[in-house]
Amino acid sequence: MAHRLLVNVIFTGASVFGRAFTEAYKQAAKASAAGGAAAGPAKTTSAGGISVDESLKILGIDKKDLNLAKIEEKYKYLFDVNSKERGNSFYLQSKIYYAMDNLKKELEYLEKVRDQKTEENST
Image (cartoon, rainbow, N blue to C red; front, side):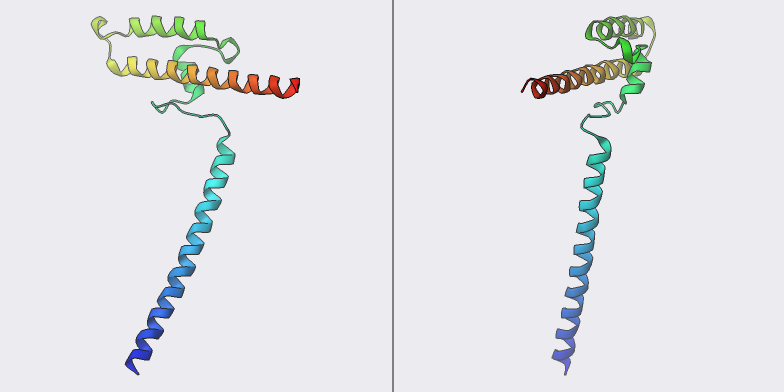
């Protein structure tokens, strides 16, 4: 009688655990699929956690005027103005650096997308 009760408890526990595991897996798969589709193909933040919009604001660049020369020009000026030797903070310099890095990555991504579209149109 005791062994039948023990076996029954084990089977019941295993079936409950199995259902819970299956449901958790389904939810995780659904969440990762929804997260990938919503985020889009572009990376939205850099290593510094700055979005593209915030990067544009930090460097004072319009999205229409986004090019590598403009990014470099604004970066050099703001990085020098906020140097530690002039009494400013390393924090501001790091924000400026991450904004520049993020915008460069965004430009690379946009060029890659543009190249893929031209290849698709030429075939």
